[in-house]
Amino acid sequence: MERRILIVLTSHEEMEHTDSKTGVWLSGFTDPYYEFIDADYQVTLASPLGGRPPIDPLSELVENRSEANRRFYEDGIAKKAFNSTKMLRGINATDYDAVFYPGGYGPIWDLATDEDSGLLILKFYNSGKPIGAVCHSPAALIKAAELQPGFLAGKNISVFTNMEEMMVRRGNNIPYMLETRLKELGARVRSSLIPFMSHVVIDGALITGQNPLSARPTAKALIKMLEGNLES
Image 1: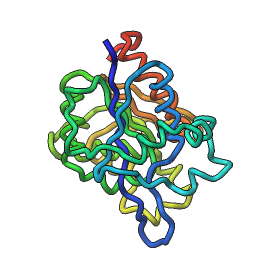
Image 2: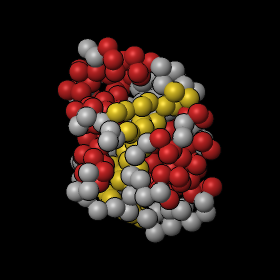
Image 3: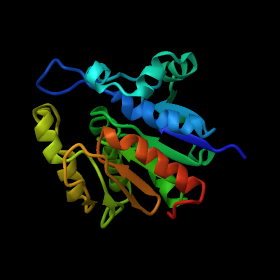
Image 4: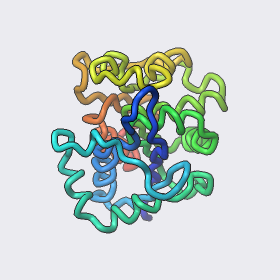
């Protein structure tokens, strides 16, 4: 039976107090995408507004490109799927075996407040289906916690840390510090001893990664969980 994975991408690109844009951190999408594709999973892309999600321009700089990024640029099928994501509102959790949220700053605006996304997360989690989220995309858990109070209480997660936020100097361009907000909701944030190192945390069906370097390992952990090689 073919396994199906839903990838939920941000539709938001504006930042605060700057003309700089944000959106999907490209390797945060491409690294997991090709992990799933190469493992013969059927992948569906969705976003709040549908269509082509914005890409954070910084993630396309040469120094931030991963091998998966270069593969994506030459992959007509992947680019077509990316340019025509389904609208999140029409997605049914029962059609998929797992959901994955790539990183980028966008989620702290739209997915953190999107009811369709929040309900999806709760449906996946309450059905024991794996949920992967990396970097800033654990912001989507905020809406789930709003819809189901106490959802994050005591859960171990990883997320782009306050320290990393300070080091990239974009803290003044976002509405809140994500690590702080998730802690306020009761989450136990676990991080690597050294900023920007890969770090993945698993708590039940919830698999979270700290930063862009954690995207591929988070996807690998999700695959292992689906295949029964990693306990949820």
